[in-house]
Each structure stands twice: as C-alpha cells, then as structure tokens.
Length: 439
Image (cartoon, rainbow, N blue to C red):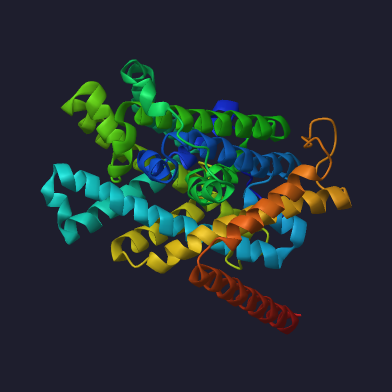
C-alpha cells in the first residue's frame, strides 16, 4: 500500500481520545433515556443498564484489541478493511459515513429547534439553512486548522456538556425518595432484551471517536485505556442519572418523554433548572457534531488513501496544518445538505442497522486477526483474556440485536449492502480497464 507523502501527526493523548469518545457517545439520547427505560422497567431500570453495559463492554473490548493492532487512521473502517479486504472496507466506509451524516443532520435539526424555542426567528426555513451553513462550515474550519485545535475544542465541549449532568447527580441525591427505587419485580429476559436494544443505541458513538486513531500517541496503550475510561464513565453516569431521576420523579418519570432530565432539574433547582438542562442539551448536541466532524472525515481520508474510495483528493493532507482538509470539507458539505433538506428518514433506518453491522465486522476482525496472527505484535498490543470467548459472545449478541430489527430495516440493510458491493466491483472493473489502457 502506497503511503501519502504527508502524514497525520500523532498529537492526541489519553485524555484527548477519552474526551472524544465520551463526546461521541453523549449526544441527544442522554436527555430522553431515563423516561424510555422507566416506561419499560420502572424502578428496576438499573438491570437494563448493567445488562447493556456488559454487552457494550464486550464489543468495546473487541475494539480495544483490534485497535491496538491496527493503529492507522479510520477506526472501525481500518480494522475491517485490513482484516477482510477492500470490498468490506468500501461497504464499511460508505455505511459508516452515511449513517453518521444522517445522524448529524437529525442532531443539527434538533439543535436548531432548541435555539428556535428561545428565539422564534430560527423557526423560519431560510434562517435554519443559514444556521446549518454557519454550524457545519465553522466546525469544518476549526478542524482543518489543526488537530490540537480540534481536540482542544472537543475536550472543552465535553466538559461543558458533562457539568450540568453531574450537577443533577451530585445535588439531586438529597431529593431522592427511597420508596421510588423499590423493585416491585425483577424484569424478564425478554423485557431486558427489548429495553437493552434501545440502550445499546444510546451507547453508540465510541467507534466514531476511534476514527482518529492514526493521530493518537502510543496507540497500543492509549486506545485500550481510553475505551475503558470512556465506556466506564458513560455507563456510571447513565446509571446515576437514571437513579436520581427515578428517585425524585417516581412513576411519573415515564410520562416526561420529551425532556425527563429537564423535569428532574426543575424539581432540584426550580424553573432555572429546566432552562439549564435545555441549554445543556443544546451544548451536548453541538458537542456531538463537533466530535463527528473531527472524527469521521478520517474514515474518508483512510478509504481514499487505501484506494478503496477512488477519489485521490480525499487523501490530501493540508501542507500547513497537516489535517485531511478536503475530507473534512466534503463531510461537512454532505452534513449541511442532509440537514437542510431534512430528507434523511430512510437514512436514519439505515444508520441503526449499519452501526450494528460495523460492530459485527469489528468482532469478526478480532477472530480473523488472531487466527492469522496479523497486525502489530509485541508486548504493547492489547489482547482480550479468555481466548475467543469475548469476540464470539460479541458476535452472538450482535446477531441477536440485529434479529430484533424491524423487517423493513433488515430488508433496507441487506439491499444497501448488496448495492454497495455492486458499486465497488464496478469501480474496480473500470479502474482495471483504465490501467490496462494506459499501459
């Protein structure tokens, strides 16, 4: 594989990578999760968090092992492409970026709706489009300017979005009514499975945060540690927020479907609490967008550099800032177009199944790399204890999750993957003909 003349700088440390992963996970979902889980399991919600936490930990352990062996940019794309070839890499890169772009478009629309609730001017279509343009172009500019500027901005936003949530946990404990936490019954396996499927999507995003692995210092050690810190931190925060919300609002928690944490904050701090959390939700959504525009262009960059996506410009690195500037611009433009058109409902369906498919590919990559004994080697690489137990369990669990998708989601996913494979082989065929013509 031919490397580009310019290389991305490894300047991101443990806390920078950890912040990027946390920022990628903590999006809009955290602000609605407590009501969804309470509606399904009531005061026994903690079982779902622990169950889902175990499942996510298995998947992230797979990311940690393969991420310590394959350390160049691209995250999950790089892991799957190097393990299974360019066809699998092409499908992963396209699905990964499209699903992320559609998700970013949805978050951008939710963000402008929050701004519009304070300033009605932003409810007008033209103003919304201008807002989207400034949002995506501004974040693109910050991330083109340099990795240090981008990761510093991500760390700042991560801190800003986490403080209000920690305030609810730390100050809200005094208002908990212990009777609201009494377990009336232990949920069945079926109930746990249904709610955990929802929670699984709430934990999505760590794979996006790992897309910057090619710019991480000492990746063999940093990547596994960052995954452990971020996933454990998010899981702990989720459980504490659920406990405080359930303990304060009791059975009424399930009725506040749009903004359960806002209602919890309102009880703790008064009317200002609702405003505080609403603003926090806006900052959280903005933070998610900043993290995605920082991370996801690296997938496009890596796919183009590897020749998987035949657009050489996407593999370009800025001579001054040493960032994949063209990939960042393309990603931001597509995000702006999706957000402005609002026509991403079908892409949202694709997004849910695509993420699980990527997870499946990473778990299988661990098995493949172990079997072939490929990737980086030495004492610094991370290896999951227990032989093949963890990756095999991860594969089984992911397949179980995929089996719970709606029929139309499964059909959409299968057709999309088939179409992408056809497109890839057409591109390869045309490329081979051009090379023969030139020779």
